Length: 312
Picture 1: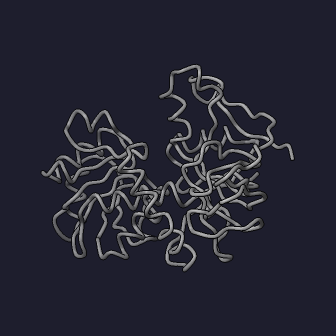
Picture 2: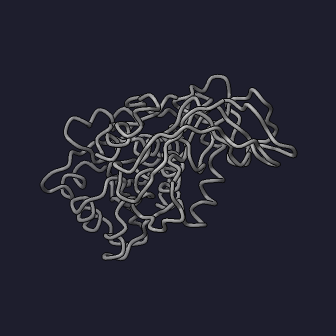
């Protein structure tokens, strides 16, 4: 059945995005065709089109994470979670072209969903969740310690706060004005951006800040992290690669092989927590698929306050 998918015809940003008619390819061995019921919207969906430059790559498919229903499958096919059948609901991450009515994907990227998991939560979990899990792991924090998280009111922040609470790690979370409740909801200690940020974080923290993690970016976040944490190995960012290069701390990227391997390994655990009701993804807003540019513009502005999801 013909549907639509979103592609980028150039490298200039949202003005180069367009919806085109498409019919997914028939699945070959080890592949699934999925009717998409929800697609997560992430800053990376735009960033990867701005970083590319090879015209041979055009048109670039958009979207990395989906939930949906398996409509066809090739021979010798198993999902990342194990056995899979036509009619199963699945979530998939690190796909290419998730902003679509339907898509054919490597089956290893798909995990069969429990009935209790809503489509929007499943589609919104894996990129933010895997990022949060990797940040927590790389921080080296253990039960009883305190870490600083910039951008704590967003989707990555919400999952990080929940995972940290499960691990017994206290989080001081920075956020914009009016977003303190979003941090406190998941057990974080909120601190609003502004003057003397490092001092106010130090005052709010119940103990020494052993690691600083940045999901927001900007000089204010970087300065506070550097002032509070002397060990550069325990300062991490997922957004500000330039600052990481300048000041000698790490920038995490899902494109890095070690990072990709970690994220692949943690997908099932995150979905199990979601199914058990021990993890939730705050959905800020949903958009129909044909308004994908509007949705991505909201996310790129950095003030969504949770996960944005497309509903085909």
